[in-house]
Length: 182
Image (spheres, one colour):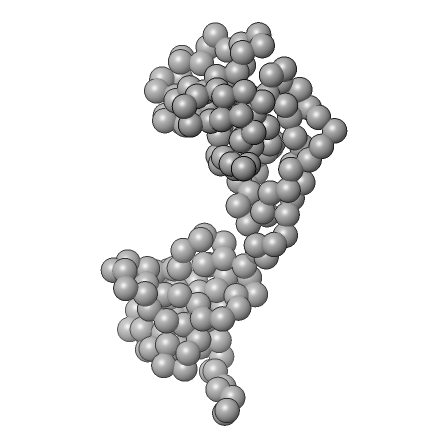
């Protein structure tokens, strides 16, 4: 099989697509690529994209928006198998245990403290005993965030509608993911 050589601009465009996709979780738009690699014309970006697609480095998906997909290994992407050990807390009573919970690094929320809480009781119809809640402790919360609250020894979940909704309880954090343990 003949090795395909890329021009410097094609390599620059390909690396920009890979890095942007790894960082943002979705591919860049044509104008973002143009700006990111210093090209003035979206048509020149389209030309590079066509060559990269023809040579098998990228492909276009069926969606209408941001349709580029990297073929093969993206060296900029975080390894899915890399895990971060989160401190594990028990639910009732709410306290830190001596254990940790392995959570994929690629799914970690950025710039916030994150903990894992193992439920030892059902706290709602959907959050059941033995579930592991991944909770981020943030400086502020947004409307419709699902918050985990503690009031004395009771833990509850409340969807934030107004900022004053959670005044009577201490906020543990925002539920960002639930791992169901069978």
